[in-house]
Length: 489
Image 1 (cartoon, helix red, strand yellow):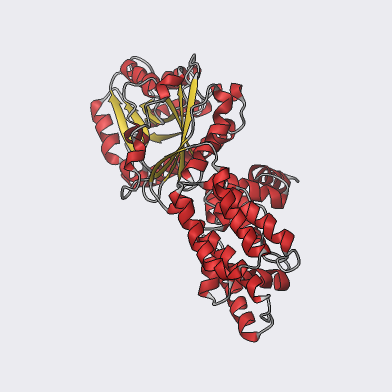
Image 2 (cartoon, rainbow, N blue to C red):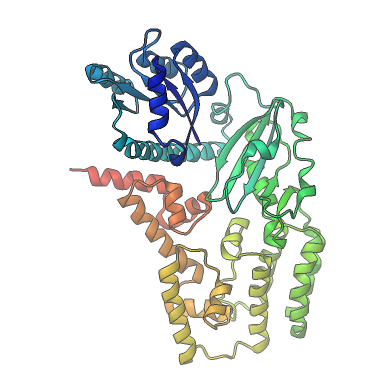
């Protein structure tokens, strides 16, 4: 909710402003109402509200003076000026000094919804721009830039990051963290449609040690978000590393679909070695009869040893190296490529889905890849699948689900994409999404986060990475370049 303070020396005018607008419907809440401009200023300095609605002429301090004071103090509140017809010149002056808008007395109640909708859109865009700037700053490891995001004079002795993944309503971090009375500063930043990063900063590392100790006991509780908890770092330069740790910890849900809180741990890569050794025996010892047992045991092994995304990435990349070195020609078109954890989450829904793909690859090797790919029924199913992707690429798409829906083994799907379209399934979907994103960047003023979501990407940074790979620049630079081109005479 956006916080609003209303200031007018007439109490009846305040009541009119409060009642004439349906603040809550548009995401606003009134946090203060003042007939004294001095009291209003104290509240503005303390709360730093998103919006101040103020009369322009008051006996103590004018609305214009309130706005000037706020700007001088670095308070980033927006101001809307209330003006009578006789004071319209003052309102124009306020606009020159940076007021967001104004409205005239008496209020036209028929215009209030339109006015609030416009304000809500402005704050939504401003919030998205700030969010992206803050996210870029925190992941840059630029200590000076990060320090500018903190309260003046605050020193950062300890840092910890939480990655909160939620499905329904965005959780209230205040209720989640229970930090009342504790000397902890929290920077909140959204990282996609349903991921919230909370950067906890204190002057002493020890102040962060007990904050999340009780959370793991709640793992598995219905409706609980997934929370990844990083280690404790010293100094602002480590925040970028801690963000990756928190995301990796939260990715535990990829393995066993659990909810609750998960702490980052040092990688347990040696525990994955038996899984790789068994796969080596299957491939090089021609023990393909044990495929079913191996795949089922693989998932159970990861759950039993509480392995997470780090180990999944290691397993996948070791398996890719082993399989492609042994069957380079047979597996050439099967999308067996080295991936990082973000790419794995984009390609596979969970560990079960990844294991299913490995199962199909091994099954094809056992059968000797003898099935003819030019059969009419297979091509017909494949063409229907491609048409479905063309209509639904903005949705989450996994090859496993599509192969079941269109009755084609997913390994054959990989071969058909390469043979008939000249690109892999992932490349085909990415091209559709990036083409949509380019059009939205050129033709709309939607935030980049909104464009990412509408193009099929829930992770803002992954979208940035894919867009840059395809277009040679970030979405922000692409939009700026296209805007400059269209404005040239």
